[in-house]
Image 1 (tube, rainbow, N blue to C red):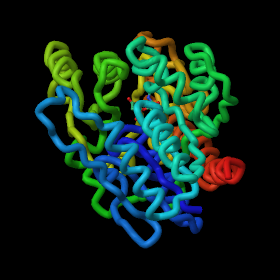
Image 2 (cartoon, rainbow, N blue to C red):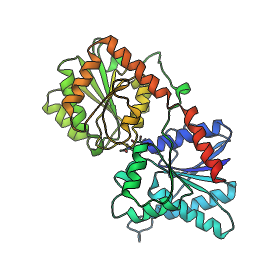
Image 3 (cartoon, rainbow, N blue to C red):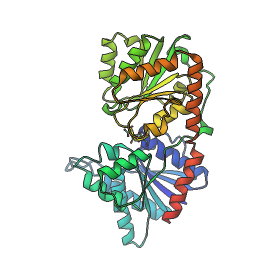
Image 4 (cartoon, protein in one colour):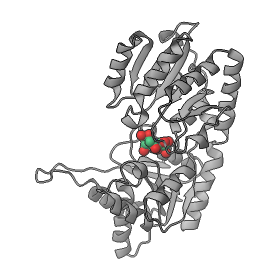
Length: 372
Ligand code: GMT
């Protein structure tokens, strides 16, 4: 099939999933066309089966806001016509499902039918999409999609609670390409962040409020008082400074390392002993799944789709949002005995294997078939 994929090209989970899906589909013989404003960060190489079409939005002084949806839908029409695209798959409803619907309508005028699948990822529903500014348009474009998928049961239920959805929502979980994981590095550079006798605790996110970054610092503060350890924070975002200030106030500034946006997440996960994800909301928690695939146990909150990924007592532990004491105690429980740590490492990997790309991509393929 010839499939156009619309996504955010950034480090965010929805863009990562869309890109990895495109790569996996291309390996299975499909022709993939990414349509977005920048080459997706996870897409290293273009090939005869993976193409990228840039959406350009020229600055015009009359517009206070440049009309990205308009440029995206126009680009989609051109790409679909030129490359004879069979299917459109949009990731993250806002504004992609809306722009996709407009493209569908324009193509219909020309006698072309373009089936559209919308994959809901989380904040497009629970945070941004539910805002009254956007809600009617999001509701409309979800209902206009030919197939709607969500990345967890929890997100499906949230969508049905928040919106007036007439469509069936199929759950297709996020995935990980286990066979392509880089699991060992000749020079893993662990020595650059921690001494031999210290444990490495990691957090990866866009450092937004919803990730509760100050909880990450508070949990680490409690753990490091019992277990020699370092905290590595990967990613960048609005809460970075607040977290850095808290680390300073708690006198653990030297034990917390902010690495910013990094392309070396796999390398860091290879030597991590524990991953913290105490989020306020999380439709799935792809960052946790990536850590688990690298055998890193998870200390997380129990919201949204996290219990579908992080299995309590097997791959890590779940606690109520904000219960930093419980999260710290669970972290200490895992880290204080190497036998326990190894048991959790194996558990994390075993659960991650259930989300292997091979098991998931065929679910998307079946749904594509259904659409055409
Ligand atoms: O976590 C974020 O803030 C980024 C966001 C995104 O849209 O890229 O992530 C959402 O989609 C990911 C991929 O499906 C999920 O793994 C994340 O749990 C979800 N984030 C939230 O629900 C907060």
